[in-house]
Image (cartoon, rainbow, N blue to C red; front, side, top):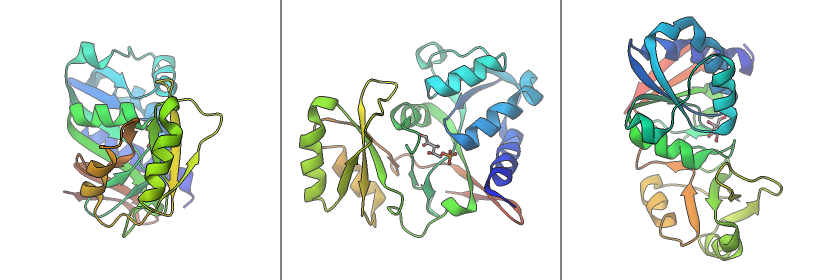
Length: 219
Ligand code: 5RP
């Protein structure tokens, strides 16, 4: 089975978790795009939608969903999003699509966070995928120097501006043995807006598509 079929299958499997009256948070990326395509099949179960990016908002609106802000929503029943890497403990690297800050906010505001991935994303240790970090543009060089001291190799995602008007540093060569501690440590560096490490708030449920079907892992 190819990767795009796995993405479609795992997106389909996540629909079962959407109960009638759900205030749904929607993430960003190609796996979530499959979910957005499928959402009209269960339109009646969705009360309202909050989105983690301009790109997802546009797709949701094209499907006829009214997208409200988190401020209007207050809280989210269920947040569904993809990831770039996940461990068995459901610690994640996210932000390959550059939407990590809004994604982390929605994950934090959600009563339940379901992460949908194909089996290529499941890893023993986080860090093979370069860790995305959103930074204030004026602090980019300063933050890069701090990251080098932590033995990372930050690479500016040149030409990319986030929905919040900031830059992304993709940090290579990390071996993240303690994701909770490392996330907290990075959060202390001034100029960092958000770290694409989701360990202090991991996913609650991981749905993984493989050749043999979709399986579930929980924290
Ligand atoms: C976007 C993300 C995505 O969830 C992550 O990059 C996975 O994307 P895809 O489903 O396209 O593999 O964090 O910021």
